[in-house]
Structure formats: structure tokens, C-alpha cells
Length: 150
Image 1 (cartoon, one colour):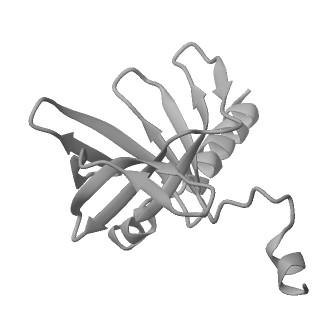
Image 2 (image 1 turned 180 degrees about the horizontal axis):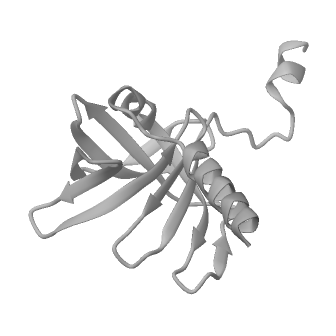
């Protein structure tokens, strides 16, 4: 019995230690265009997004900045309006929070994962949003390498 308990404890510690810890240096990875890939609801069901009309654009400097919704265009650019949310990055123990504010509301989301290519955010309704970093939009069906050989 004791042997099994030690094994379970070891596995739990291993899983916790493998979880990415977001550092202040990682926050610069937040800058740029992000596309939602999947939302996981608090009851465990998922909604996957194959195509998005809007992306999220972040610009953070010294843990403060903006997030705005942008719309990708066929020529690879993005359209945006003047609306945006102020964002402050807050570190609290082992957690990282994104505190948003507009003239009309304030709310907080937890930043669970942040890499060069992916991000995971959880809101106050326990919905988890999986993002991927958005690159150039290619609607021709050809990849960049093929286009360079023409």
C-alpha cells in the first residue's frame, strides 16, 4: 500500500513540475496576432474553430498594453477599428493574470500557457481558450516554399 502511494505521489509531482511556468521574460511572446483554435467549457465539452473572422492582437510593453479584435484580409493585412481593451499583466505567486479594462468594464483572465506558437487563457467562467499564433494568410493553397520557386 505504501509503495503504491509513493508511486502516485511521484507521478503527481512529476506532472506538476512539467507544467510550464510563465516568467516575466515570456510576456513578450504575447505580442502579435492570435487565433482561437478551441474553447473548453467548464463541463468539459469542447468547441473547435476551423476558421475565425476575428483574431486577437496584443501589444504589451513593460507588462501593460492593449488587446484588440482584428479581421484578417485576403492580402495578409488586418482591419481593425478604434476599440481596444487596456491590459495589465499581473504576477501573483505561481499565477499570471491579464487584467482588462475599458471605460465600461473590468475583468481578469488567467494566462495558463504561453509559448512562441500557442497560448491558453482561462476566464472567470472557467472557459479555457486555446490560441495559436497567426501567421500570414495563404488562400492560394500553395505553401511559401513553392511560391519562391516560381
